[in-house]
Amino acid sequence: STRAAADRLADDLRRRGFEGSVATVQSSGRTLYRVRVGPARDRATAVALETRLKGAGFPGRIVPAG
Image 1: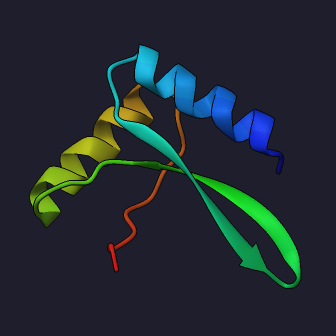
Image 2: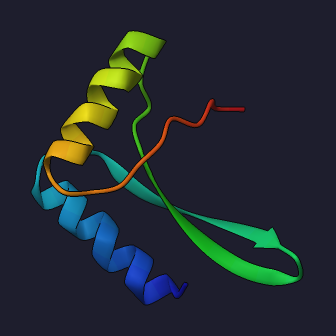
């Protein structure tokens, strides 16, 4: 919910070998911060990445780019 929390999560992901970045989005008049991991070149790679994330204790879901 805060930029600082999103940055900490992205840093934690990077320390564990993931490529994490923070994206700022507007929703219902509020500023939100989404931590994204990837990109993945295809669906199979995205599924494998999601499995690795969950195995490391991070929630996640696949979101198509664009």
